[in-house]
Image (cartoon, rainbow, N blue to C red; front, side):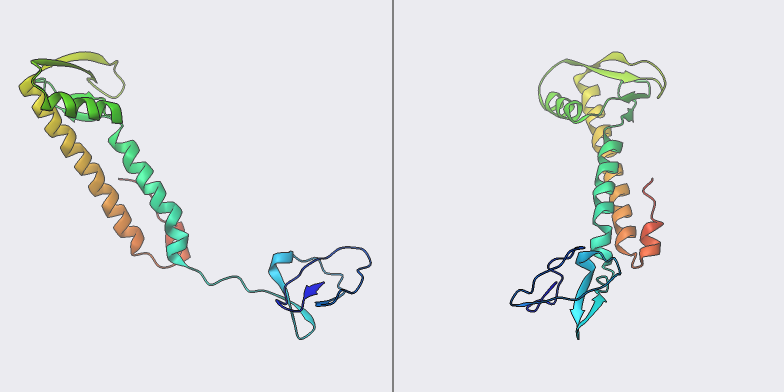
Length: 172
C-alpha cells in the first residue's frame, strides 16, 4: 500500500489489505526493502541511492584521525631533561601535572619514565630547570603529533572518490 501524497510505501504484507482513502494498493510477488521503493505511474520502482557525498563519507575518518592523534600524544614522549633520554608518561593527567608544576616554584618534581618502550617505568626526580626542559619537550611532542594529524586531515580532505577514501590509511 502506497501513500498517494508521498508515493512511498506505507504498509505491506502477505494478507488482504482493505482499501483506504488516500492510499493505492499494488500487488507484487517481489520482496522489497520498504524504504527503497516508491510508486511511479502505478508501478513499484526502486528509489535510487542518494548521490555519493565525499564529505559525509569522510566524517568517521576525521574522528578516527582525532583519536589517533590523541592516542599518539598520550603514548609517551622522549626527553633528555634528566640528562639521559627517557620516555615519559603523557596521559592527559600527566600533561596537566607537568604544566602546573613547571609554572610553580617547586624545587623538584617526581615523574614516571622508562628507558625504552619495553622496559619498566621508574620514578625520576627532576629539578625545576629540568622540569622546564621536560615541559618544552612535551609541548614539542604535542605539536609534532598535531602536525601529523593536520597532514592526515589535509590528505583526507583532498580525496574525492569512494575508492580513494576507502584506501586512506591513518598512520604517521
